Amino acid sequence: MPKPIYVLNGPNLNLLGSREPHIYGTTTLDDVRALCEARAAALGYSVVFRQSNHEGELIDWIQEAREAASALILNPAGYGHTSIAILDALKALSIPIVECHLSNPAAREAFRHKTYVSLAATGVVAGFGAKSYELALEAAAGLLGAADASA
Ligand code: CA2
Image 1 (cartoon, protein in one colour):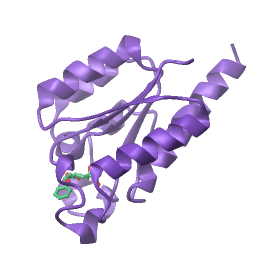
Image 2 (image 1 turned 90 degrees about the vertical axis):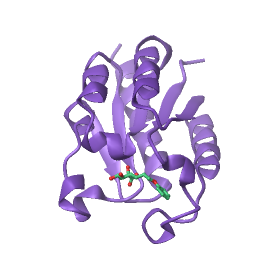
Image 3 (image 1 turned 135 degrees about the horizontal axis):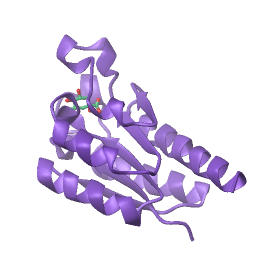
């Protein structure tokens, strides 16, 4: 069994489904977790799915992923636009990193147009609601499969 794919979620995503449905939809974070577990299982992976409102806790989990994960999917939420510390933690990883957003930040306010996370990400999936997470898992599994095939 390969190492799990870590799916980490940043601040306020615990509120998903309860507010701003016009932007983020009505899916709850527990629904997203279930979608991720099912999609990952179909791809031959397990997931470690977590959410935190605390920057340091997210950084601890990113550091944990260096050894424990085969790939990292990160929705940094608001921290993506502000946190150099999260960028620094991501730069210490040598596994695939997929940045994932429910909305398309590039189509929203100017302060959402750039994320520090993108500087360390292998790629970005944004704008497809909960489906962004499934697409991110497919991208991560594709990268891992390609790495296996060339080994
Ligand atoms: O589209 C995304 O996934 C975001 O990462 C969500 C962040 C936002 O700051 C990013 O620019 C884009 C916000 C997460 C807050 O989520 C809520 C969900 C429901 C109700 C309130 C907040």
